[in-house]
Image (cartoon, rainbow, N blue to C red):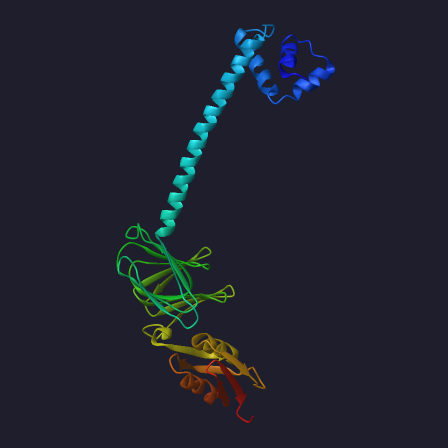
Length: 301
């Protein structure tokens, strides 16, 4: 049906049932009704006459133009907001530093305040530099040694807890559900769950499988900084795994009993010496294949 015909009959309140359905199906039907309701509301009583067809068409056009203009303004605001948000995220991302290490790789990171971080293999460190002097916060996955310059509070966040210092030397290890913090100089505060632990120089905190333990140490810095891996009553499989990681090799063993325990160390810069350090005390032998694969046997094999 003709739109103009339906609109005039609707204004005269003279639509048939079929015409009413046709009118309600019009794209602008809702807008026409809103204009008519506004006219009645402004008149002060509900029996006031709705506008004439020409007046209604004029208001409709005005309302459409206003709607279009508003949409343009809203679109501009939205565009400005999106651009601003994009720039904010870009600038923050640009000022976020992330350093990650691979197998058998270590990295030295100098922070904006000249604090030094030694990042061990298979680890990741993230920090933001723009406001570093006022907010010294890092996120760590894996293991790192920190030599922190004195200044404002220095926080290291991990998945297990937070380490807080002012200026000191300490090591943080977070792997395989183990959270270990070792203090070599100064004082370290460890926060996990609702507990706060104070660690003076020469002490260590270990959280393993939900059990916390604090003990003393007798070394001046982590062994891994000296390119050494040290073990105390460790399973031979754990030692082999560390050896694989340090030398990027694959180890296959035919050991009859895998309950062997190892106490000792191996170096990181000579595979033959490392294998001798492990196999000889345990009565084992080894064979290196193509510098990428090692086979370990019982001595009698």
